[in-house]
Amino acid sequence: MIRILILKTKKSVHFDNKYMSIAFNLAKKGIAASFPNPSVGCVVVECNHDFKNDKIVGFGFTQRGGRPHAEAKALEKINFKKKKKYLCYSTLEPCSHFGRDVSCLDKIKKTPISQIIFALKDPDKRMKGSKIKQLSVDGKTIRSGILKKDLFKFYEGYFLNKIKNRPKITLKMASTLDGKITASKKKWISNSSSRKIVHHLRSYHDAILVGSNTVRIDNPRLTCRIKGLENTSPIRIVINRKLDLSENLQIITDKSVKTILISSLKNEQIPKHLKKKNIEIINIKTEKFNLKNVLRELSSYGINNLLVEGGAQTAGFFLKSKFVDELMIFRNNFFVGDSELSLIKFKGSYNEEEFKLKKLMKLKNNILEIYQSQSSLIFF
Image (tube, rainbow, N blue to C red; front, side, top):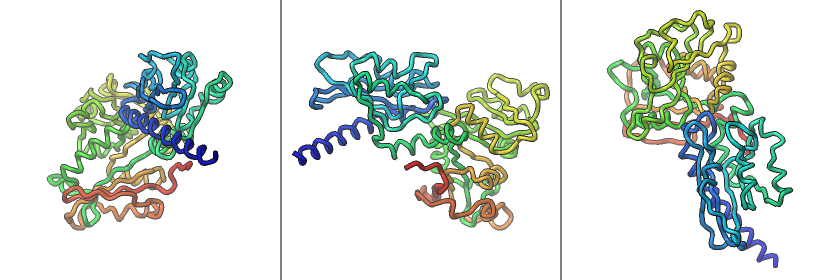
């Protein structure tokens, strides 16, 4: 009898992992596009009461702009049958609060779904006192924790936002073999393969941040320009306290993506050329203008994953403040000599032991080094 129970448990674990993995893959489809909501994946499974003849009858992920939610999409066209059993797998606890629509939990409640399984509880304060416990009173089974370690990594930025009032921060840098982070304007430090990865990296983030000097010197567009990713460009953010950027810069003239300027100027001091539809000004009072408050503002804006691509000053600013969760260094195989700014100078800005090398990737004559902060938000 004990052996039968063990076999049944193993089978149910496999069943749960199988469908939560599918929900996870669906969630990945909505990365960044679901802003300002986290991307959630959901599948509804139909089976016999002995869990045989199982199949997916509904699936969905959070749509562009955050609506409809994954559960709402999954429930849209299901033809429920009386003699069947239904299970709902969601990567994040279904919402129970009312917004622009009826909550997902209320929608599920009206269906014959008997089990609601999710990986992680939602840390959103609005979920306190969630109605999900009431569903168990109504005869529905509630389970959580399936693939929670994998899913937490995916939702790390969302958890940081809700718990620490800041986004997850990835700092991207490029370096030569002798540790220089700048080179001649005629020469790229990173190669074409590395730059392609950077465009993919941008598409996974809600926003990309640079400093004013980078904008003035490089005049970047900060968009995704790889075929198929053109509509996945992140919000552009520039720390520009005095709002003194030229009206001819690409991040000002390009209207394809929103640009946020973070300033300490009052509204009446905003220059006319910055009062455009694609530009938004976030004002932080001079006495409160520090990185912690900047990140708090971005967090309240709904930004969960922030990519920092700034130059030396901005990178040093983030490292010194100990807000970097992931450090990505694209290292080339050439030397440029002593005249350029060195990566070694950054070692005074952070403790090397704070970062652990997680991955190395060879990209022709470049190597991508990915480091993880040891002080990142870890629950498991």
